[in-house]
View 1: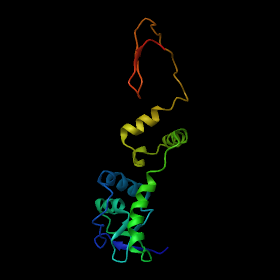
View 2: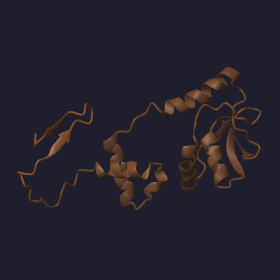
View 3: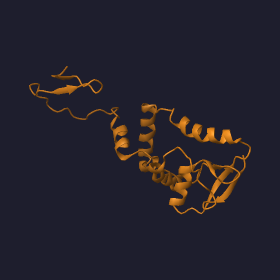
View 4: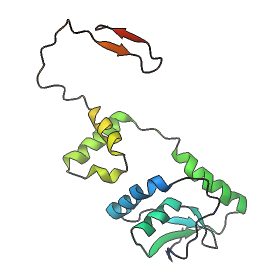
Length: 164
């Protein structure tokens, strides 16, 4: 793999890019600022982006003039089209192991690392961190057993009252 530097103004987005990525640009820009440009953009022989549209937009957003690229000039036109789709689709196939992720998030928090650099929306990060029940409550409040409680199933919506 040969990585070369290209001027961001010389790189052209693929006009039929099916991935809508504007919402991710700020998070990727933050990632580039925090970690550096660790993944090159892949372009064809004409400097049209094959993969890396979001990285290119993020680089432009933070004022980068030069970015690392790989020129994939050995792919057929069909492979280029397929790679654009496969690169994005394969990223959607993975899931988080919530327990391991929580451990990593807590370790970063203990290291006083700014978790906002990870790309999670604030509410999602709070939700994931709130799932940490390993320490449990330090005090137990008095519970009035006579207070009616209502519950509902998040899947079917069935509602019931009481402690069961």
